[in-house]
Length: 294
Image (tube, rainbow, N blue to C red; front, side):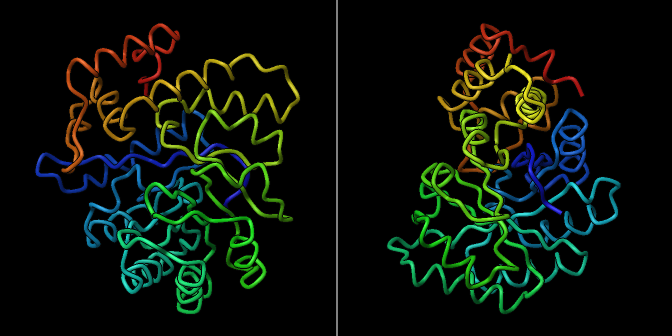
């Protein structure tokens, strides 16, 4: 069951032939949880899910279903097709994975409030056990959720729409729905969001900032003075100056060459940019050696 906390939009690890390395992908998420995260979302945008085949996604779902941390594992779909979304969600449901991070179909511009509502409605009617975390990220989907659009969905499907990942940052300060989970998509919004009533974060960069972000969260919960939030924000801002997937894979490839495998059209950072990234992080006393420890 999803609850307040610090979560990663977990990376996907690939083989040299660019197929999904299921075991390494699971091991990566397991290490993140061991280093402080409350859980991980597989097959989100950070996990290159739009570029990964349905069969590979199904294999991953099957494998994590017997994992000791399965209750801390959650899923996205990375599908544009309505029917493919439904098929994958039904498959996940066979393994009792019902909490799904779900973005409206992308690619076609001009998504309307009515069309997006119909998208979620059809999925819920086909998959009545689903618990949806709406993914609000206009940059990728071409659609910006309003407070009114979220409220309408929650009022229409109160048992199914349980939260939102807000990566457009227009909701987390203003959306006030009882027992509704709100997760900004950035460490830079973590403390401010908690102060405004948010539930934590679901972030790409917690693939590296796991321990720092958990410290900020725990200190807020225990009403302890903050000592790490400024560093956390600066680390996030450093990663934000690059393509996040490229930067994260480049960062992790220092320790493990498997992270050098990345699906086109995505690329790794150039050697120069990778060196620049590490130098910036070292200046923040966020060293790769310390934070890449398994």
